[in-house]
Image (cartoon, rainbow, N blue to C red; front, side, top):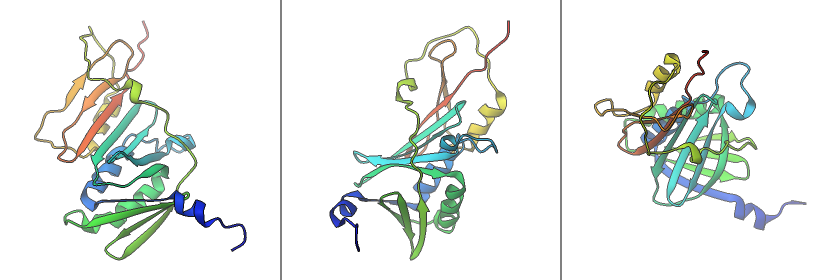
Length: 203
């Protein structure tokens, strides 16, 4: 085909393989923090999926909450892919019949196209050219006592939708005034970094 560069196409193709159960929890949990409102900014109406150094990460933020989950992989690479919430729902529908079983889902990326294959079923997703705002500098396990903090209880309660082990305690840590609250939830396979911004108070 004229204008088609086979070498470049080969270099951009990537693949990871993960259990349907783990992948379901990973993207479902991240999507809790995405902005699902009608007037959401385009880059905040996504989850961001990437894999490197033997770890698959899904993350999202609406500027008030951030949820980032990481799971160990046997191998594979995936450059950061912005997936619309509408397409996340399509992926969850594909996974739903298999989440109680030990089925594997294969995720192939070629350019901006993700192809998910599960038990002979295929779903094609077109990713967007957005990048998640950097957040690693806000994540910390160095907690400090503070006299008080103001929270939006609705946003705090919404984080209970993130898949986690309800028999284990959820850790809430504070790093300073007007800094994100650090929330850690237990999961058998996923390491969650969850942030919640405090509310401003009028004095």
